[in-house]
Image (cartoon, rainbow, N blue to C red):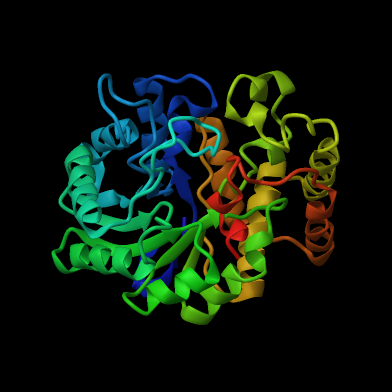
Length: 342
């Protein structure tokens, strides 16, 4: 697989792997199966691995970020660290839903926490350096400049290679980038989640920041392979798009599938290829990070890096978002995602 250079000179494989998928968030899995998929990703040249301190089930008797996905990734890194560009995130410390109960603080970005979170991730990952370290969600009580300033200290200390931000507004990105170089913004971007194109994507292009779309396949919905029973068993069943609007959004599945059939590709491949094309049209590097628990799906996704869409396909796919019913936010709080703060 070819490489792409994000911002700040960070080179990654053209496609990344979202390791959240190998936690039980979208159904059950086990460590052996998860490690098999992670190793298959690296074997296939998908060497940009994305995790976070909050992914996974909390350890018994603990509070705060779970860290179990980082520990799982550490088992791969113990054998193959030199082959991997490693990304992880910090900043989420509580439930994401406004109605999740408890009333506690959900995010932290104060300087003391930044330093502690970095050291904790390094310990769990069993590595000396994090190649790309994201602020997972900004702390509304702390200026983003303070948070990024503390993150930059970790770069100066040799603990972090490059900095990233997740779900930030264009204004927050500009404020952060004025403090330290930002290599990448990670936010949801896909055929049916395009709000970032209004302000965030242009700001990235202006500043020379790369974009890493998460949920590039609409949490699997855009692939056309899911059943209603599957999504009902995990968090997707309670979201606006795949819960009550499941039937209405089959129009989205059908539209993507029609393009895929004409091109003799899969729906997942054309959805990912559309993101690469959208990055080129916007003038910025794009590295999507689909996740999967299947080695077969991994190979299918990886092939999308070489799929070129013709003008007819692009025109049809550009209209898909108009068919979508329901918003993309998985939390009850509208400010949890960038568009809710713009």
